[in-house]
Image (cartoon, rainbow over all chains, first blue to last red; front, side, top):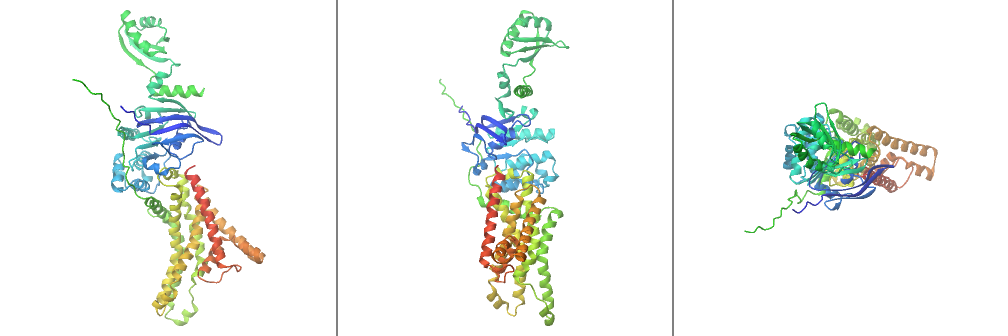
Length: 311
Length: 294
C-alpha cells in the first residue's frame, strides 16, 4: 500500500504569548482519517489548532497543509473547514442562512444543493429555518459543523466539536465525524474529554503543558510506557496458587488478591506475562477464566502522561 | 499458476477542486450581511430602532419642508415668506443624526464579531482581512451614504417638479446630481471610516460610539475655540480639527456656497478631509489585519 501522505506537517512549532509558552517545540504529521488532539485544559490544543489553521503565527517553527504554508494563504481555506471552540455565529440568522453565508464566503457555486447537503449531514433539516439563538448548544454545534463542511473540504479542523452536546447529540456527531473520516478526509478533533475521543479517533496526539507528550494509537502509546507497570486482572480457579507460581517470574512487579479473590498482577512486560501465564496455569492445574489489562485505557494513558509530565 | 504482486492504493479524499465563485461574490456576501446588520433587517424591532430613527431624523425634516412648500405654493404670498434650505444648508442639520447613526450603528458591524469570536469565521475562509473590512466598510457606507443623499435627492426632485419648466430646469441644474453625490460622500465616507476605526479598538459598542462622538465633539470644540480666540493662519489650521466643520465646508465648496469657517480654498478643505479619511482608512486596515490574523 502506498502510505497516505501527511495532510498536515507541524515542524518544531512553538508559540508564546507575552512570556507564556503555550506551545513548545511540537512536531507532528497528520494523515487522512480522524486524529485527536487530546490534553487537559490549558495544554495548548487550541493554540496549536489555531496555528495549524493559520489564524495565529508561530513564534518558531513551520506549519504546512497540503504541502503549502497556511499562514497568509487564504486561498488554502477552500480546502479547509475550521470550526472554532467558541460559538462564532450570528445569532439573528437562521441555521440555513448561517450555512448559506459560509457557503458564499467559500465561493460555493451550487449554493442550494451544498447548503441542503450539509444540513442533511448533521440531521437538522427540520430546524434549519429557526434562528440560531433558538437552538440548544448541541444543535448550534451541529449547525456550525454543517457550515464548516458546506464547501466539501478534504481537511476539517474541529476544536472541541462535541462540547455542550447531550449524549444523544454526541453520539450523532461522533457518527458524522467518523463517516467523514471514513470518506478519506483528514479530520483533526481537539478535546479534553477522554470518552469523546476513545471511540472516535484512529490516532491521538496527546498534549500536556504545551508539549507533545505522546503520539499514535493510544494502546501503542501505552505499550511504550515501559517505565510504568501494567496492571492485569486474572480470574482463575485457584488465585493463591497461581500467585505463588507467578511470583517466580522476573517480569512481575507485584501480585495481590482483592476482596473478591481476583488476582491483580503488576508487570513491566505484559507480552512475557501473557506467554508465561498459560504454562504456569497448566503446570499447577489451574483454570484461567479471564485475563484483563486494567489500565489499558486511554484514560489511564492520559492520566499517567499528564501527571507524570507535571511532576 | 503464478500470482502477480498486488498493490492496494490509498484512495484518499477528493472534494471539488474546480472553479469557485469569484472573490467579488465572497465580498458581496459580507457586504450583504453588513447592510442587513446596519439596517437591522431580519432582526427584532429593537435592532431596527436606532438605525431607522436616526435615518428618519436625517430624512424626515426635508420631506416635511418639501410638503409644507408644496402646500404653500398656490398661496404665492406665504410661499415667498417660506424658503426651502439650500442643498448645502441642509447638511448643517443632517450631519447631527448622521453622526449619531454612524457612532451608534457602525460598531455593530465590528464589535460583536470581535466579542463573539466571529472574526475566526472570516479568518478561516478564503478571504483576506482587507476583503472583510473593505466589505463591511462598503456596506455601512452604502447605508450611510444613502441616508445622506436621500434628503438632497428629495429636495432636488421637488425643485425640478416645482419649476415652471422642469425640462429646462433639469438642463440648467443637472450638475446638482453629481455635486449632491459628492456631498453625501464627503459626509458619509469620513463618518463611516471614523466610526469603524473606533469600533476596531473595542469589543463594546457603547465605547466605540462614545469614542466616535468624542472625536467629533472635541474636534468641533477646538475648531470653535480657534475661531473665537485666534485669527489668521493659527485659527485656520486649528479649525481643521473639527471634522464635522471640515465636512460641511467641503459640502459648501461642492455646491459652490460660501464656507462658514475662516476663508480657505475649498479644494484645500476637501483635500484635508480626503487626507484625514485616508489616514483613518489605512489605520483601520492595519488594525483589522491585526485582529483577523493575530
